[in-house]
Image (cartoon, rainbow, N blue to C red; front, side, top):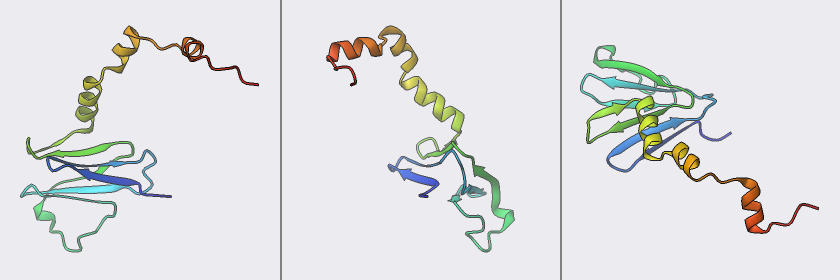
Length: 114
């Protein structure tokens, strides 16, 4: 069945994404000293004092979790996806240079299926 959560880092960012089914939910905590604990299991730390927990949340199915160390913040999923979509304006590209399958097949001289 494979992993439900994948984590990644490049030194500036650390993040995680959860598959769209979310069969194994991921939870994260932000402590009062701005440390982040992210795990696919609840209760990884036996004795986490609730007094040091500033935020408690979960990574939802199909969502991404990203910390930007340069900006010292957690980037919300919506902002992350909007930024990525704006960086690659596929809708505008397709409107200005449509690729029609019939034309592509004709140009490629693909023989018809038997």
